[in-house]
Length: 134
Image (cartoon, rainbow, N blue to C red; front, side, top):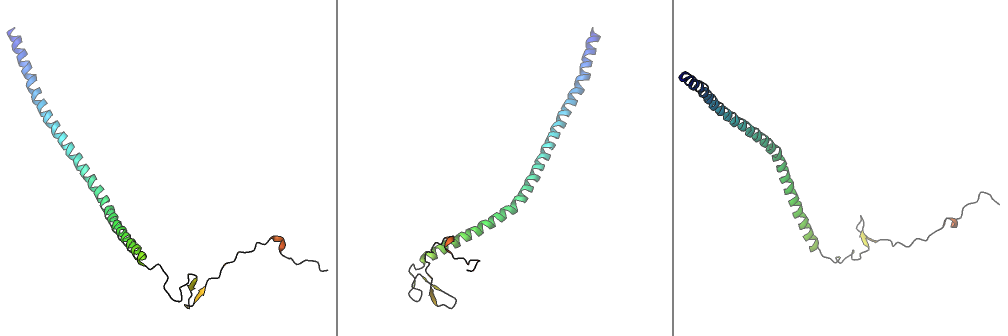
């Protein structure tokens, strides 16, 4: 019985010691692999983000230029509106005092012809030349 107990203790030690060492080494290697995997994933995300920034950056620059142009156009439109409101509302005295007078290329004022209502004609009211002469 003493031999059996000694054999069992030696067997347990023979199996338990290497298994614990192999298990702990396996755990360390697994953790190292996980850290490397995480670093690769972060590096890939950083590269993808930098590509997005490289693509978005020129678009943002163009958008800011367009924004500046639109702001300038808005300012010019406001300035034009202010100047338009500052113009005199009455026609200046002189040859163009009448609202119906329009200057032509030789700067002589002429009146627009008044349109008269057209007389409605029916088709039968026109005289057509007859084909037969009598």
